[in-house]
Length: 92
Image 1 (cartoon, rainbow, N blue to C red):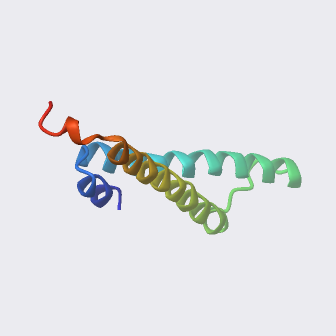
Image 2: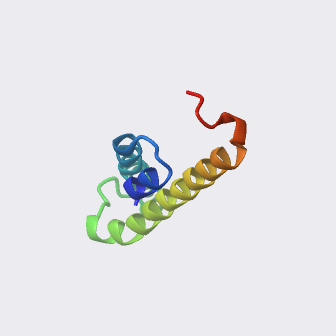
């Protein structure tokens, strides 16, 4: 989706594709660390980390964060196009 967004607004294709992937992976990692630490404090077990159960909670949240980043980029690109003036056409 990030690739098609960058292509639609004529931006850097692979840069925004990689940034979209990184937003998902980083949010997944940080949410995993936070949830494991919260569950370990709540249940007094340092080794409590069932990956299937954590994935059921973390993957939708990571997708939500990536979706928020997607909407942020979409609004940013729309604003940049809206702010361009007719006198800017042909200028590099």
